Length: 109
Image (tube, rainbow, N blue to C red; front, side, top):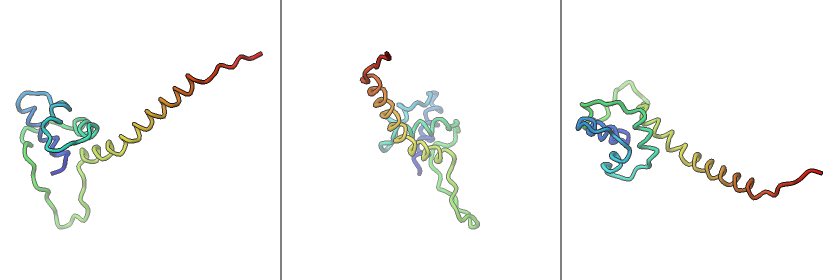
């Protein structure tokens, strides 16, 4: 079972109980540590399916040579790839801001 499936199953169970799935509720019920961007990415694409509360085995067809990943899993992989870049951009912006604040003001004659 993929982490995307696990998150979707938990979200469906919560929705079946009349609760609104949230990152905190899902994180508290996961079997392993999962980065928040991963949970958020799956929740963005999640749609309530009351019957999907248990993992199914992946079906393999004879004429399929490549395994196609569900869009929620692709979104999860993209979110995981982008997260370090977003963090680095945020740090760079902070450094630029500090440099600009500490730069002396030059007066023209």
